[in-house]
Image (cartoon, rainbow, N blue to C red; front, side, top):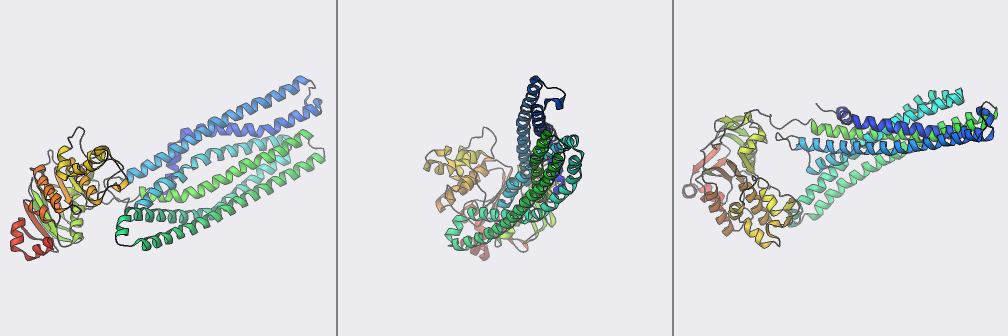
Length: 565
């Protein structure tokens, strides 16, 4: 099972080559930075008293100046190359995490989306993945900072043993203190990210249903709901920001006090004549230089404090149990399309027995919409029945691979969404390459939609198809379902937004286009039910009645009330 620690570890291990190269380059950069005050001190001593270096010539001074120049050349190039490699590692880690989350969400077995709004999933894939990937920035710079501290400590030991020991003995407690200072931020970072994800989820939910909200006059209630969620997210963010501010301030104060102590000890040693003027300059320069590496270590601790809750949230999605087992079987080849349901119990369905011969156009009418939703979920293997079995051409659905099964049974949901792209791209999304789209466009009357648009089939469609009316979206979605040419097609209320004339045309065209292939239409539309070979009505006890549309209208008062109301 994935855990936050495992997510962090795997993310780092996956990019270990980039991180190793970047760390080495940045270590060389930091070592070069640490040597700058040392070399400056040497140059100063050489200029003030050449005899201190055993030389005395101008050539020696020029030589040390040249060494200082080479040091700058080395550290600048190492920083440029190391930073580039580090940023690439961070970007690639971010991409890999987003792909991994996307792969889990799109897993045919489902389960990752359970209990989570789409906006919350997007927030995890974008915000949390970014926070985890930022460790790829913090880690190389942090390790390079540690290397700089070691180089500085060695240099200080050569200048003065007390100063070197002060660095070596003072660093462990300082690092421990920095880690303790980061814990409040870590505790508050999790709730902040959770509230932000909740706000994003609510916002996405409201945007998706904005037309419905306007239609029922619920704008004020929607705004109040988002205000509450957004206010909670703001308060959590402010608490986390305060914790981050205290952490950065306390980190800076701790570093400053430590550096002040180093400067004090170095000044006293210089006053006593234990070190030269150049060595004093080097010591003070190293003390000032150490502020950078120590701050980097503090930021690394802060990055980890923020990355850990994000990694936990990513791990929850990656470790989410699937809704259905994977299954290893495959549908028959070719798929004839015969369905057999025995004792199916799932949600409102109670002991459903139903036979659908291959090639039949079956209408399904139900008094309880939940029963239809439960049946469609089982046929699509979004969930397996609590009891009973469903077989396709004699093979149990529960034993089939969900991905392979959905190539045989296509369930077109009533609220199927369109995607950003052209009208033609939406229709052809499920079709094989080279498929002639004219028949499905005509059958669904989506060709009329194209005729009303400026660029016809090349007209861009906005996200969720919001640039189209409800009836236009429904025609395009139906055309897309028909274009798949699935051996078994299940349609759920495909014509609720269409006028009666268009609906009658769609019913006749559907019968003609799907001739010889199994088609199930869950609807209460008289036009669609009249085009079906057989109609069954579902109740609490399973199939209540079966027959042709005309027979059921003649013999069943409950059926007349259901479809003619």
